[in-house]
Length: 85
Image (cartoon, rainbow, N blue to C red; front, side):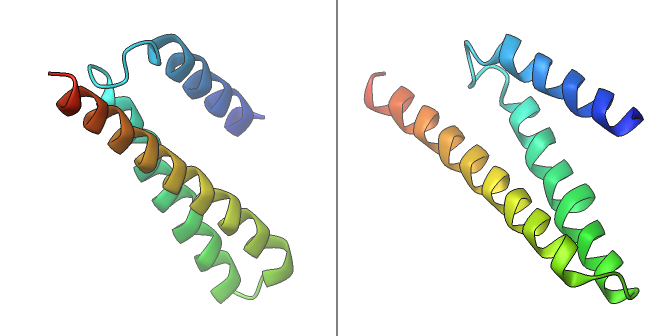
């Protein structure tokens, strides 16, 4: 339950500050790094410790999608700012 509240809190803050992503890109990097370490790395550790890969691989894919889209949208915002400066 604590994990769910943590994710909900992070999501609420991201939505609130999404109006200006470049001024708040530290939050985006926070989520990207959390997804890498609390997501992909931790799930991979569980798999290496004998937990069912079939249960964790789908979550690794979801984490990778979140990482990729976060990075991609941040790059889009940076490129938009450069092209309209």
